[in-house]
Image (tube, rainbow, N blue to C red; front, side):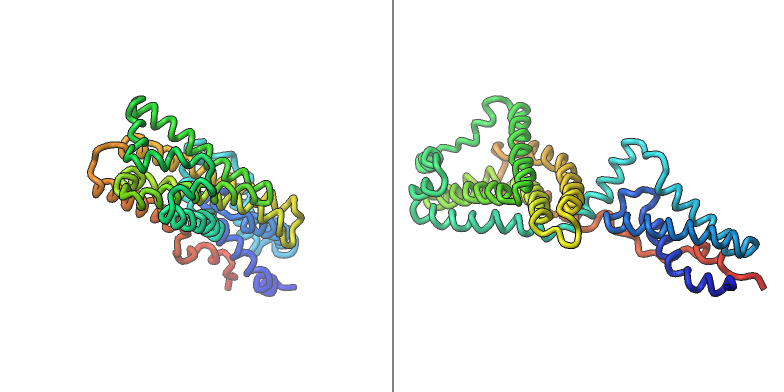
Length: 334
């Protein structure tokens, strides 16, 4: 076998390995689980090719090229861990938004499992507020407050807004964690958490609309609602991933499928932590304030645009041409 035949046969896999190394940007966290598996396979193959090249083409340029490629791949795979701050930067500027985009279908399913019960409870409560108790036990006290025009959410200010914001964050974290952890029960408890939260918001909104109290309610909910509900949908989608991996593992074993799904889901949940803090701060300081409804709607729209621009646009791979030096060493000498 001559060197040119060896290069022609092996070159596609070397270029594929180079592409993955360029995408990784020296951090494996930038690659998906499937890409990590492919990276390992291509690295082992390149190592084997280097051994063949050293044996059969010791003085050929391809040997030097493969030596550099294998060294680069080895450094990426076995490099020392990055400093914690750098890991966090990479996670929030690449890993988290990328995983969100890869699993957006689960987030959409989570949104629908919230929206549909919310619409049903809204219609029921709008027609007959007292009937909401059939869907949500204990709702009568909430209906009574709305009927009598009591804005119970203004009590947040009584304990001081800093303490209230902390309490709200704790409650949001609890709901988010329940939506996520419920996935281990084949996603059944996740669906329950999403449906009950949808029934609660839809029912209260329907009753408020019935009694002409809707402006007061949305004046409180509008500012923080976009971020808070988005976090619940993402966490619910993470929980549904767990349930689906158990129910339909595909070609993998259930254990292997669950491990892969759990890793993605845990990363989504971790990425939601700062969003929960933001939602809690807005709900504690802006939502119960006397600021105009127009300003609160502006906060809602603005936070939504910023959040989804980040999730959809940040961390996408750069579409730059492959560097010339990636293939130059393979040119044969005259």
